[in-house]
Amino acid sequence: MNRRNLVLFIAAGLAVAFVLAFFVSPYASSKPDGLNKVAADKGFDSDIQESPVNGSPLAGYDVHGVHDAKLSKGLSGIIGVALTFAIGYGLLTLLRASRRRTHHRFVASGTREPSGDETLDGAAT
Amino acid sequence: MHIPDGFIDGPTSIAGGAVAVAGLAVCVKKASETMDDKQIPLAGLTAAFVFAVQMLNFPVANGTSGHLLGGVLAAVLVGPWVGTLCVSVVLTVQCLLFADGGVSALGLNIINMAMVGAFGGYAIFLLVRRLLPKTRRSVTIAAGVAAGLAPPLAATVFTVEYAIGGNGAAAVSTVAAAMIGVHVLIGIGEGIITAMAVGSVLAVRPDLVWGAKDLPSHPVVPVAVA
Image 1 (tube, rainbow over the protein chains, first blue to last red):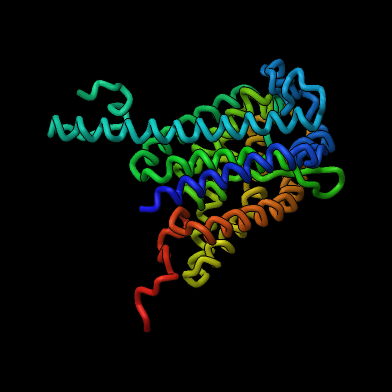
Image 2 (image 1 turned 45 degrees about the vertical axis):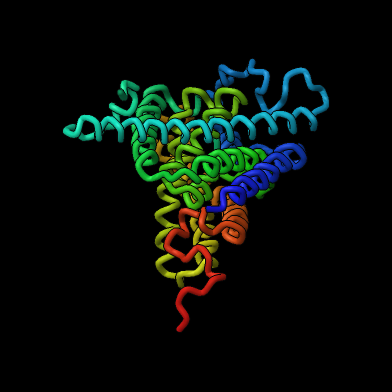
């Protein structure tokens, strides 16, 4: 109905997310979060292991090679917002496509109930 | 709230991973049955917004910070099935690219932050809505109350995981009291942020809000006049 309106709404929402991630996140509290603080205070953090992806160019919300701390965190936020939007959008697009395929097959065969497995094998026609 | 590697032992982490995979499979199936086309961009936006706001740690007591978990927010905006998927996308990206949350603990983190909020929190949301009149304001209030309770609920579930397979020496009762205590405070922030976000979307596009589906989308045009 109001498709243009929806595009505008999404664009505005994304703009808010980008602003928060780029301009506000560098000023967020850097104190340990609830779990880490409790673990340190109560002494159950002795077995903590470094994440195996600590060598990632985005590890710790810093873009590797960007030396200004605020800029580095802000840029990592931009990348994360763009990536999570793309993956969320892409995932649901795939779900819609798989549903249509299942529906076509169900109609074509006329006998079998669609099941979750059938939506994944791609042999729709 | 992101569990790092090493806090919870291997078997418990693997079991958590299995529960998360099974739960996500159900969510995928239910989401594909219930979604409509306008949810596609909205799911992307929900994931992106939760990612952004999770970066905004706010101070709570004694040199501690907290951040939005986002499960209730996502469930109220796009429904619990798609909402769980949105928060899980965020947690997976954080875990694999930003080294936030352990890789072995990803399943546990999906349970605590995505599923507990999007299902447990959403159940509270529905309960609170039944006690309030059928208005947009009630949707905002119910979302805020449910989101306020989601962090202590997640902290309780973490304590159960710690009781089953915690590597640390701290007593379960000590961990329970400390975790729930600090997450009651974090819940205040979660509730305020969620109510503000839900209220903003309701003000411009109430038709997009899953948790307000039962309300008339365009009350500006009166359909029935008493």
